[in-house]
Image (cartoon, rainbow, N blue to C red; front, side, top):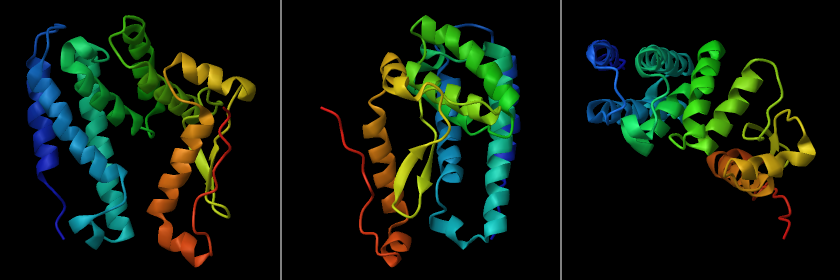
Amino acid sequence: MKYPVLLLVTTLLLTGHICQAQNTAAFNKALADSLNTWKDVDQIAANIPSGKYKELSREAWQHYKDSVFGNHKEIMENIFNRYGFPGYDLVGKDGSHHYWLMVQHCDKWPAFQEKVLTAMKKQVDKKNASPSDYAYLTDRVLLNTGRKQIYATQVTYNTDSCQALPRPTQDSLLINVHRKEMGLGSIEEYLNTMSSMHFEMNKTVYEQKGITKAKLYAIKQ
């Protein structure tokens, strides 16, 4: 099966277009539309292979993912160098979210993620970017640089019970306080959602173990 070859070509063409754009906060529809297109490709690579991608070997699939995330890192960095973090005024709420989403997947480049995080904070303070997205990227950066997360957005799983567990988190007794400040729901509700999603994505494996549903946390009233 041939790899998609248009991604790199599109990257080069659109990167050149962005470099020529004026440095302005006026709404940039072309950039917003491009972010939406790149986001669609990002989501193919970020999720379980489906459709024609199910035909790829494990090595070929990993190569495809690496190529997508690597190409997108270059594009996101080019955008960042031109505009800083693209807020609502520049690309709309969807466009800003799409940019953030692709930076989330730049885990091989934590220094770049942290640079974006710093710039994003300024936009969040101006209500020009999503505080909940900022919380997710904060946790990603902290964990990727060997520190504990704050908002418990990053999880692992107990595969003996199909239950989501927060990765190392600071101030564990204050998680819900921190989450509420960023517009996030309770940690118990979040972990239950992640546990249920994990079960559905791995249902066959868990049913072979005799596990018929995810283990959920009690919700405090």
